[in-house]
Length: 369
Image (cartoon, rainbow, N blue to C red; front, top):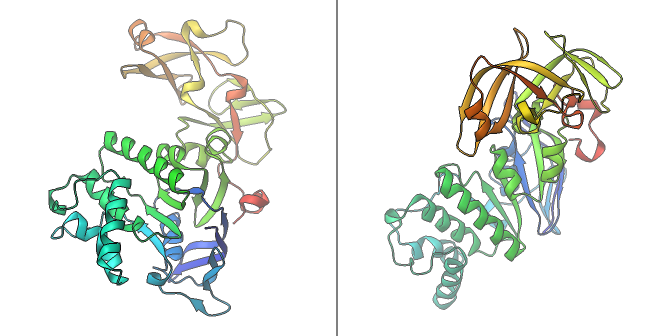
């Protein structure tokens, strides 16, 4: 079902956790709330679930009004038909897998036959066939998270909320389970809201990403849009852009980096009092890959190199105060050494010139919050 959030504000004492937030989530869409700890993403989710009471605003799911401060509506969390999966699993270790998954159905006083059929169907859906009678304390972390997911899905919820459900798992298991979650969401066509601070997870799971800072949405778009065109240097930094370089002087089509005599040709940008030149490490060309006469070709000194197997990373000093990170190949790691002088090329279309933060009054209307 469609989720609509209008003018949502939530505060804890003098601290504002969510600031006048507006958001539309289409039916069947997977939306990820992405941001640093304290940005308001979990608070927003808890308001949808009914676990927090907002100061003001309106929340609807489909045609049902769950919260409306003006009309005095605040439906209890257990009456919202919303499934929620927590970071901490929150399953009962003294119960079997079947008993954990069946619990919400028992609370709804479903018949034994209905409980047995729906639990079996849901366990198969999350890949836990044959685990029904196993004690929950005997499960691995990944299996426990699947039980928590099954317990939410067995209710046949209108929407699913997931609060960093993979953060307690190791990297390989996290990678596998996020693929399973994405496949499951597609198969069920279930509207879902996923909270995470992991940008790779967000890119993998989302139809749309809502980037949050300071209790508001500062950018909303498809994963490729958010990744390729961040609206500020702080967003770019959070999304893994390794090189955020202060700009000393800026003119039409060119900027000069602070602390260097390096002037870079750049594409169009919006002038601002402060600017940063942002370049991903993987977009910079190194050594023999550098076109000899290409614009934005400079020379620097390798200060460190790290061999990472399939790739290598280099730190290259352009001046006493400025270093850049470059991703190279494993072959380049064998040929280059610390202290070597080397050419690097920053392609014009790879250099984004951005303000440090998204100006609050200049947000595009569709992402203003």
